[in-house]
Length: 380
Image (cartoon, rainbow, N blue to C red; front, side):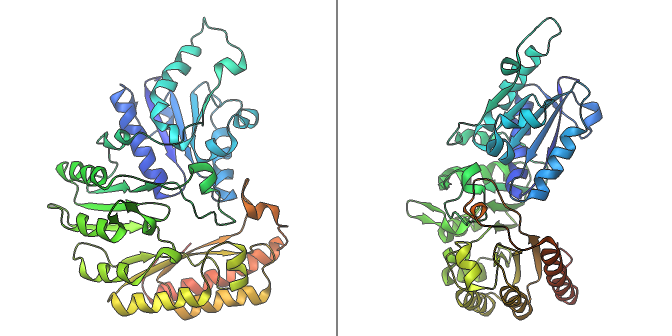
């Protein structure tokens, strides 16, 4: 069983792709994969720190496994808490940050050695944490492992440099780093050779992509030309880096899905400024008007945070009215929770739980009504 690995993924599509990369590396190192924790000797949790709820789920899952299995915590929580994870969860054997995932097979080998019955080690010797990496090696994306045999996630950039005041991503994944366009295209070609026909390009802010003369729109054009590719999409866009040239490309490129996920977060200019989003309500609404004018039968989804520090009823009403006016096809709606290391953590979390829940319910009900009318079910 020590050669069988079970991995549970929390969070975004980036974590899904990271987990595929890890699975590919493990298979090459001779480890087997299983979809059952009961059949595994090694259990990995690839974690998310974006919301408190996501972290709470991870701690709960870790607590269920105290039967001698090797346990590793990977991803954003690993980077955020480092060796402090061992204090809260002594049954965890190793911790690996997002930029160090190439080391996972070797670390598991070391942990297995420490676990031998005739070996005695102190806590610090037996526990391993790797969270000092600044940049991934490019070859880890070429293991050839994809969970879906028809679809592939392809990372075009890592990290983020926006520093939205509520967001922990720049602190756990680092500043934005763009992969070379030729390496991205090579990875897509490898996926196509395996019979995959659909691709999603991933980045925390795909619109900011840059590789010499290849910007994001140029990259979309290059991907659209690839033989064997039937359909592709991208996620996630940031409003401040989104412009009409992207919408024109979306309208013109026949293989590109007419789908845009563009987080609004708040409809209040005052809150948007506190969030350090870099755009106004008017800028966002004007952008949406252009998008729908240029891209016919376009799908539009968004993210919303309610209960951000100092949010008043008037601020919330601005957000509510924005959703009502835009009529997003779907929305991901969250209650604000303070995140370690972020600027917003310094603000008093002064919107009481009762008000957060009331606002969340009101805006969720509004969006569900809109989504039902537009026949879209992915509203959270």
